Length: 411
Image (cartoon, rainbow, N blue to C red; front, side, top):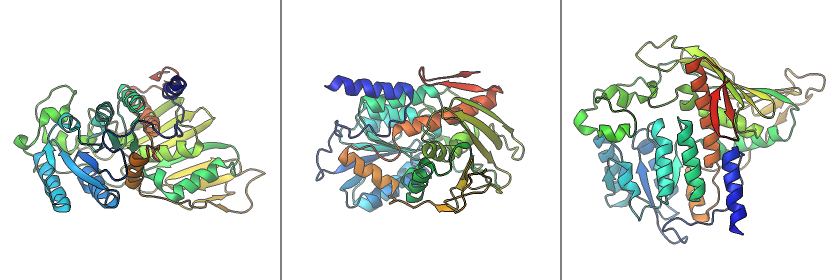
């Protein structure tokens, strides 16, 4: 009876279907066989997200779940040493420390890892973690290259790993309630969803005078990218360069686009276009500081995503435009504004559902072997969208996604 389940999993991965309900995962973590066993967690990436956000959440949320951070990995010695000192303060013993993620993944007694590296490294490390039998919490965007996204999904599914992607809105009770309201059909036919994430600053243009070559495992940082001389700017300001990320669609838009496709229950795009440029921050960055992307989806609607880094004036995070009215993720209310003859005559408020901490949801799912709130298929979906936006902007051509072949190609 096992073969039909495997075939179904393969089909879900190939077709790009939602796959939010694969159910429980029969393969346990390498060591976490029971609720009384300690969960051993490795931290891969100790920057602002890894050590500044994820590591403290593992510590705080894991106190009553018998969780301990036992290993640390970062290519930058000061960040690595700071994280080690913090973990020792928390647990009273020093974790093992590495500059290469492969060494951490080789530890038999580590059950799961958090991945908070530069974007280009997310999926390769996630795939390696899954093959090593580790569950994982992976920051967004999950991937910057489609081949890496496919490899990660395939490895996670084949090895039945519990993976949480860092799109935290999926654990938020307001967003759960908003998804239920939109999916109830209260607005009628939805033709456009507008998603925006704006700022009025240069974003990520941080200093790098404290980064010394002797402190950085530069080849470990580059991984499989072409070799180049050490460059502290590319290390600290990696967000600004095409080698390391797809720009604002991945860095910022992945959150907003994820909400849109989740609420619409329509994960993978058909086509994508993009236009914009570097209009404000001429500081050596390679990515557009102002970008608008248009994506069409199979159910027949348009996702209009925009980020500008020159002005914060914006609509709500995500706005749904429909025949019966409008809904946004600021008011959390469906109203008749802009609707036609059958528009809503009374506002309908989304009822918040019980929310939970995103990290705790993952830790609990490691124990239960259930799918977490933001599974790897959701990460694959926002990766496809952000990669299409990037490629459309780079080439000036509409991009098509073939769900059967899992390919992106120019129109």
